[in-house]
Length: 112
Length: 114
Image (cartoon, rainbow over all chains, first blue to last red; front, side, top):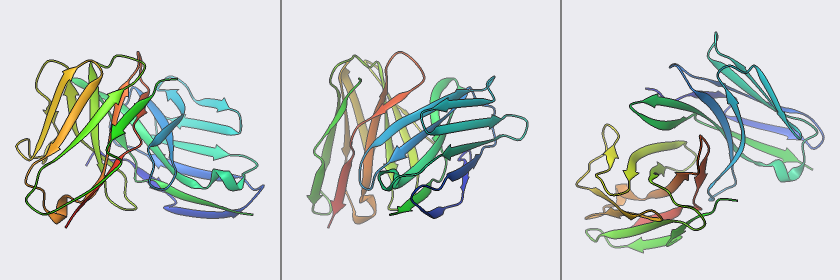
């Protein structure tokens, strides 16, 4: 299966702590993206990191990419209750046509 | 920003009936849209790529006669679940590219087949 793997599957932390999620993939990628999904809703794009980049920041988000290990991590600093959601990595591949392949997701719960 | 809408947001139908789900790009044109399926507490699985003016490209294992896709205009793609059965109950989400690598997702349609 092309699908990416994420760990942990679930993460529960206290407000103010940092949350780290990891993603691994198997194929060559053009870029890797992280999305957020609130329960029963659509996905919201958070950040994109290209295959030639190693680290990227956006506000309280920090993403790293290690193409040699085919892995990425998403760090959310100073977490807030509103960060409670599921987070998915998605890797962008081009096999004839472009498509996104999603990881299994991490359910993040921030406890007030 | 780019907005993608879906209609209906929820649908409940009887087994054997067909259900049509619409996906619209509201403020941009999308030559390509994507249809995903998501089971509870699971990830998104790409079902098919919808191409304006041509046939959809289906992922392996997805029955094209079961899930009919029509992309008749640059702002509208439809997914019809034909002869729906309880195992088709799921959350269906569409998305579209806006000039780049980021996909914008619709809010999803929850289908329940009784």
